[in-house]
Image 1 (cartoon, rainbow, N blue to C red):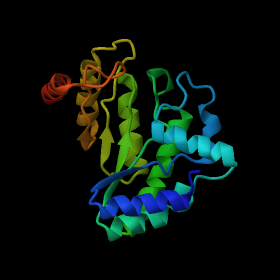
Image 2: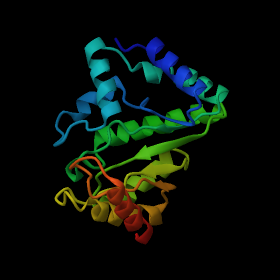
Image 3: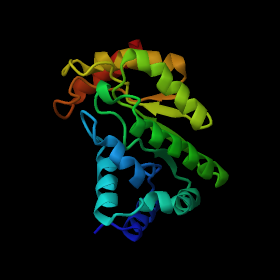
Image 4: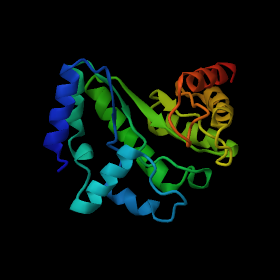
Length: 212
């Protein structure tokens, strides 16, 4: 039942309610989905997986990609900033910096130029799970293809083998990618991959990132 019209009307409804910031998964394109077939962890982004399933079900290009200029018009009219979501981000370090991730990133760079031409405020969402030796490549690629648009990263986590301690594994990645040029960090709590965080988990995550 998901269509561009439903999505458009929901954007407008929420913008009229005063939402300041959307995440738009417009970079998940039909040609990129086969690139995820051999991944260890597939497509882990909720928004990314929804759009990938839509493309495969309808055998069509993403309506978000096709109507991106209209998304920008809505966001500009209501002064809403947005993040271009990384729907094909790696869900494990084994998939980091693969063809699917970087194909989407190049498309996000293309969409950034459209957003800027329409006077929209845009940032680029980043991973995720990236081993230490691949973090600089990821950051350099983003700066190059996205015109140095602000990069916003969830860590990244530098290993997959420490559930319960992902505030630490992501703090390591956050310190590195911050040094290499990311603009905003999204902290990670000890509950990452285990459950929903409580107030103390949030406190621990924020303190860890401040130290990092």
